Image (tube, rainbow, N blue to C red; front, side):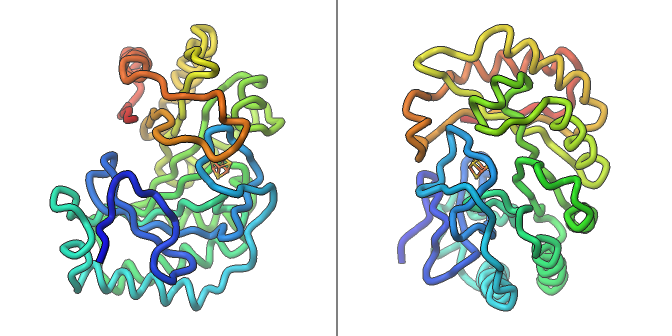
Length: 279
Ligand code: SF4
């Protein structure tokens, strides 16, 4: 049986459709991922996206019975069985979280809240009190009432929202996320999300044709985070660790650890809570 490695972030596991386990240095353990976008469809097209064959669009209808069966099977194997011993490197044998992180934006699914209800039911069945439930999102659907119901429920499941803010300049949002969106609408959605559930800003920083993000761009970002710091739980900074899957990402590369550390220091100096960075 092959072991999971921190280099392998595939969202395909055995013959499962929706559930995939990954180990990561960031979480120092095992994360059980849920992919609602098995057709690789997203409404954004971030240049650093790692999804092979990404298309613009929405996820297909989800087979909730199958998803529940897969999640139940994996949780039983992890909690009552030998999954960690069999599959995880010895230093990462800790079950950290269930994570809604797919090959596209999870909240585009109209069954998103039904999926959170399944997570709630199975967390209870397996008495998961320590593990987090994480939603990694671009925040585009937060204004939908059905999504807000799901996010409220998520908050009761040791929930966290990791809300993507890669640039706070319109041209930067357009270039990086390839969407036409104002920073005012991102801020409105971010504040809405943070009212419903613990919310971290998650930011990917990278070089473009060998150039770090400009000082002006970074300064605007720091001011933005400063402005919303009392509403958020923290900030997660990272850089592109692997090669992007999209041709638009051909020119991008990782910023240095020092670059991320410098931004983190500036945020800490503004009293932004819980600033973390990882590559
Ligand atoms: S929001 Fe996520 S899945 Fe969608 S394009 Fe951006 S990185 Fe890829």
